[in-house]
Length: 301
Image 1: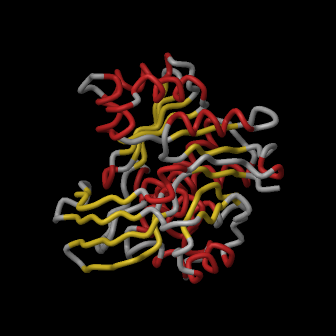
Image 2: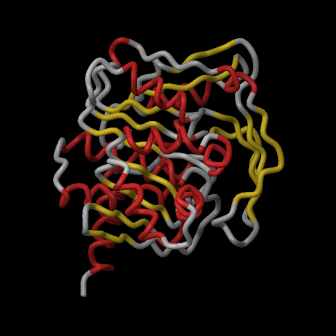
Image 3: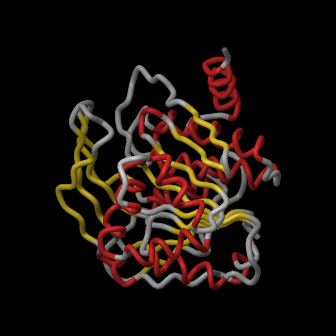
């Protein structure tokens, strides 16, 4: 049984940044989160791809020990995203989106997934997030959700309902401001906590992330990278690695959640150094622990 179940998209991307261009590369929120989580635990992937999805990408997932029993292969083409970044790498520009088989996706959890102690409701329709949560046989020890501006604009009430149902609400700064109609991130985080989420985490791109926990908060900076080739999926890697570490340690104390936040930032920083998950292919736990220790030195004073 996977210790962590990850719901989201698996896609094929065409991406251009100031540092290169790639076509038909592996992407999608569930892809990135699963690969990042696999450094710490065995995740189960819940997503859909088309018949055109390259076998080499499936082999990569399997090589990482990711359980793909929840990955549906449907007749049709895989979800595709075409986008680019200018020198402001915090802002992605969409050229074209083709939902394809993702448009009709109705996730069904394999029986072995339904008692997993950790669940990540990745960037997908809030109604599908709620449906998957309802398929669990018992309440997981920790449920975390993510969202995006597309769903906040079109399904705000359902996004708020998801925030009420989960333990950790994760979103970036722009999404938090939009969802709660405030320019102030502290106020937005308080609104998240008022909705019964135990923890609010607000991602700030290259500037790191902030965790709000009752009346306390913890901030982790972005790792100062010299080379950022493609930031796509960094937020999903952050979430996957964070939850993977918590699933491995089974420790949900505030101290350990803070550690998990740093591990999430570490893996996300490595991912941004190359396109797709290419930077993670040869990554070792020694590399991850080394950068984790650098983070510790950065924040000491």
